Amino acid sequence: MQATEHLHDHDHNHDHHHNNTQAWVKTTLLFGLGLYFVYNIVSGNLTNYINVRFSWLSYLAAILFLLLAVSSVLKLLRNEHHHDHNHDDHQHESISWSMMAIVAIPLVLGTFIPSRPLGADAMNGDFNMNAVGVTTTVSFEKPPLERNVLDWIRMFNVSDDLSLFNGQEADITGFIYRDDTFTENQFLAARFTISCCVADAVAVGLPVAWDENIPSDTWVRVQGHFELGEFRGEPKPILRPTSIEIIQQPEHPYLYP
Image 1: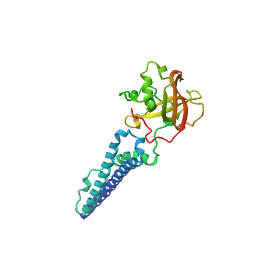
Image 2: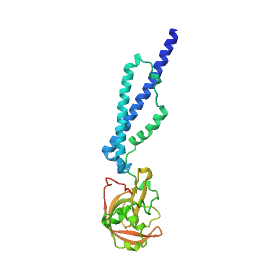
Image 3: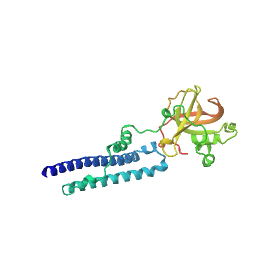
Image 4: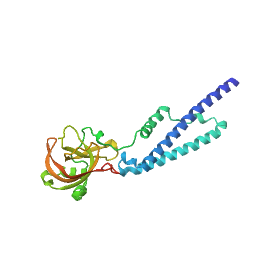
């Protein structure tokens, strides 16, 4: 009888230790996720991942993760205090190690891989020069010098006569992108658009004719005017710069359709 009770106590203590370890790991993950969201919000890295319109979801996630973590700590401390008097803790539900490993993957990747927005390396020849998210008339109401890359693309794609843009002045910012289908003096002033997050990112760009060689992925401000020309074998308005200024990456590098 004593041997049976001893075996029961041993199994109970083993189960308690196992469940307790899982619970502390889960709590650590909750704290880690909450602090990771807080860090991205405070550092400004949040805009590298999502549309600014949905920032409130990240604030909510940070609060929920931290509240769950604090609740889990309080529950663990309470269970530890009552462990010697209550043997029901082995019946508490626990999350499997495999599930916690899956949850930990994005936290580990986000912590050790530097945060940066998508750039020229992410394009790999894939970009869009057609209308993107034409749902409003905002692009048409803006004065020409206030239009961004996406605004101009929308304008071009609803026009039946691209020669109408000859001589129109533009002042845009983007990063430089080149590939083998461009002529030697052409590059794309490119931006990524995101509707929700980087998972739905689409690269867009305006062709620029410029003889000087500026490294790919460099952010530039291009001021000039359009002339109808040929880009990748098709007639397109080509931006002829009067000046190109190398700039720092904008605070919000993405455009939002």
